[in-house]
Amino acid sequence: MSDPNKDWLEEELENLQDLEAPKTLLPKVMKKVHQRAQKAWWARMTESRADLLRSFVLGVSVFLLVLFFLIDPAQFFSRVPGASALLNLIPLLLDAAKTALFGAKVFNFSLLGLLAPAIVFSYIFLVATASAIQHLANARK
Image (tube, rainbow, N blue to C red):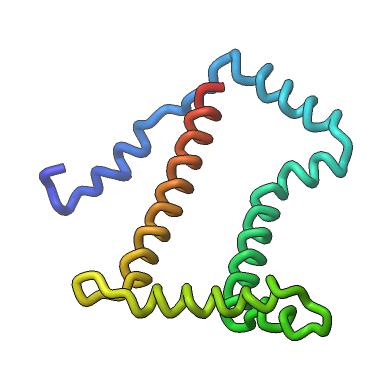
């Protein structure tokens, strides 16, 4: 290792021996293969697509959230003839809440500017905690 012209890594790689898997590993692997083969094709397909489905649902949720910020559904439903007074009241309440969140100041910061990072960080913390619990539960099996 001290000689810069000598390739010590190649020598170490050549000296490495092949590692063998433990004898108990093959029966476990074959058991899992047989269990998977016994499942119906649609069950195998949905099992492997669970993460894809979760990502799709999250993407649709974010899209709808952005859409609701751009298009106020209460505004549209309140203009429907025969709509109840509650539907006419919803846009007024939402406008008052928006004004309060942007207008209220705490140390010259808007209330929304202080609440939004707290909400985002708490969501990230919850997702990370749930992920850690899931990994620990899988590792325990």
